[in-house]
Image 1 (cartoon, rainbow, N blue to C red):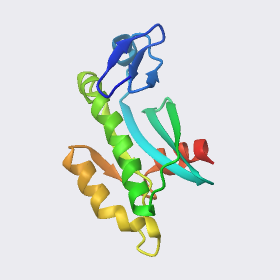
Image 2 (cartoon, one colour; image 1 turned 180 degrees about the vertical axis):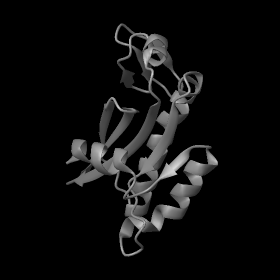
Image 3 (cartoon, rainbow, N blue to C red; image 1 turned 60 degrees about the vertical axis):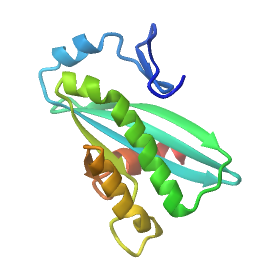
Image 4 (cartoon, rainbow, N blue to C red; image 1 turned 135 degrees about the vertical axis):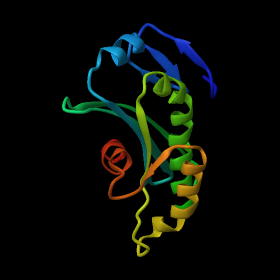
Length: 160
């Protein structure tokens, strides 16, 4: 599938190879009486010559737990730490942008989580300003470590 390509499948909507297993999103979101929040984040891990990326969409239902969808991919492209952090953010924004109309339609609050440390003693901090500007410039709420649980906890479990 290509960016922007959406098709209805038996299991749900596919957005850029991200299968959302919600057979009828309208029934699901309208049936939930509590506020639903969506958090999107990506993490990566370099393993030898490969870099593995995992992107997650986490849905939190106030007072009723949550669930997540996972997509991971591997590439042989080599990145500097700053480039890799910005690629993670770009992957999260791509998914957030695709899901924005659905989230807006059903009044789902959305945040984009960046696996970037706010402490300047860490290498990932070099990408903080660019990542924050990118996410906020696209109109999404921004979270970085330690509040960015979608990327730093959920997606991290997939790549480690």
